[in-house]
Image 1 (spheres, one colour):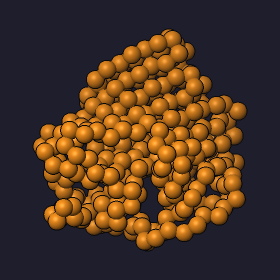
Image 2: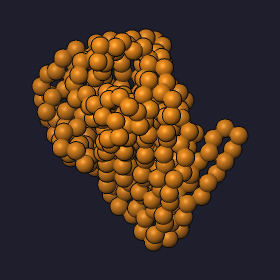
Image 3: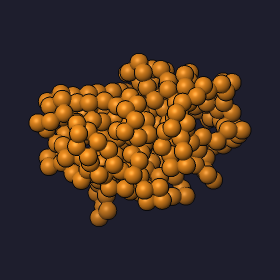
Image 4: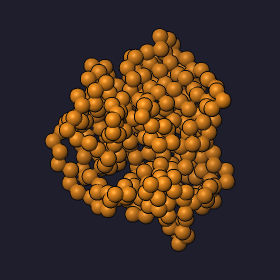
Length: 298
């Protein structure tokens, strides 16, 4: 039987979900945008923070909304109006990873069963904020089970005006030895970026699959299908699938780490300006996507 517990401290409020023996365990931070701080499957560490940097630097498992990745100089135009977002990527003067990564989510619903548990979290932006003057809500539904982890994200426009958006998720997957790990993904195109991480074009991606991570370092975005990517490590394999037919995938291998970011996204860097896979949401309408992590131990 799975159980759900709240753990509070002066700095954070966490939700801990685990099965009876604790071999499957999920820790979610309500005060850090509803992100996954830790996910274990059969006592293997699958998703966690990075050891060498803090959350405000690596955005580990951050929920990315209303934009995924970067907005160049934090500036964009929508319906003839110019907006200026805070530039929280100071080195490149970009806005990065959206506006909810540091917001406090509320626990809405929870349910436990013998082989799974579900929790639902919600954040409501009632006033709009700097550079994005729209009201919206974000609903997160996590399901941990004996098969893996699912995240369903639902965004609703609570405003009287249509707004632009993309969204994504920023988990780091941990390997006992990244040099002995490999990726397989059905890539259609690779995006080209400049030194600021802003997309400037596309090119064919012709790497032979699987890609051995001992030989290749990534900080790139790709177009992929519903079967987004499979990571094989010495201890486990995880396959990430999307409920959408067309997807974008950001892959990043940080230096001096056995972690790799595999980020499912519905848009790419600077979508508010280049319109690549940019979405719009009308008043009282919703958009949802589910990402399914299927985990098997080796």
